[in-house]
Structure formats: C-alpha cells, structure tokens
Figure 1: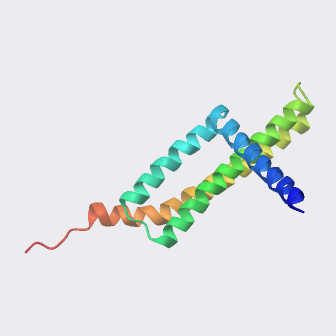
Figure 2 (figure 1 turned 180 degrees about the vertical axis):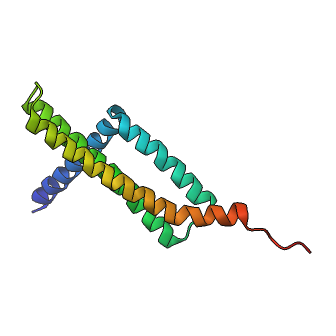
Figure 3 (figure 1 turned 120 degrees about the vertical axis):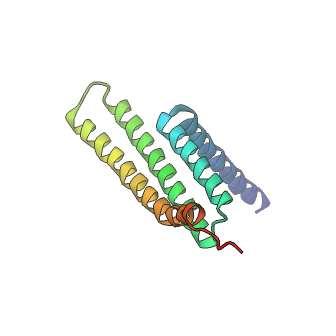
Length: 133
C-alpha cells in the first residue's frame, strides 16, 4: 500500500515538473508571452500602488491568468499544426487564426476588466482635489 502511494505521489510530482517545464518553454520562447508577462508585472505594480481591494485583485489575477492560459493554448495549437504540416495549408492557417483570435478575445476582455478597475482609481488620484483648510 505504501509503495503504491509513493508511486502515485511520484507521478503527481513528475506531472507538476512537466507542467512547469511547459510554462517555462512558453515564457522563454514566445515573444507574445513575454509581452503579456511585462504587462502583467506593470498591472500588478499599479494594483499594489493603488491598494486594490480583494475583489479587484480577484478580477485582475483572473484576467492575467486567462490571458496567460490562452497564450499557452495558442502556442500548443500552433506547434501542433506546424508539426503536422510544414508547408502552408489553408486549413492549418485557419486553425491558427482561430486560436489567435481566442487569445485576442481574452486580451480584450482583460483590458476591459483593467479599465473598469483602474480608470476610476486614476481619475480619483489625479483629478480629485482635497479641500484645503
């Protein structure tokens, strides 16, 4: 029983190692993911500086994760397509376009979430004046 539990645990650990390796491959090799990471760092810095509420953080983290996941799926789909067909193929091109479109939908949604959260905070910060005594 203990040996079986150890085998299951080792399989889980190996699964996580493979998953982290996949994340690293996307982060280190894909320009769009690097751009997404850079934007996410800026957003988190602004969120920290503007003292977002817990609810706002939930939406920001969800939006960032959604874009990262979409970009990762898109990379996997593109690499699979490239492995299947090395020359230009109209159907493969359509699949890649659809996959990229999904990333764009997620990025636009994340941007809208960011605008809803951050624009009022910037307006308050820069355009609201405190009454002077």
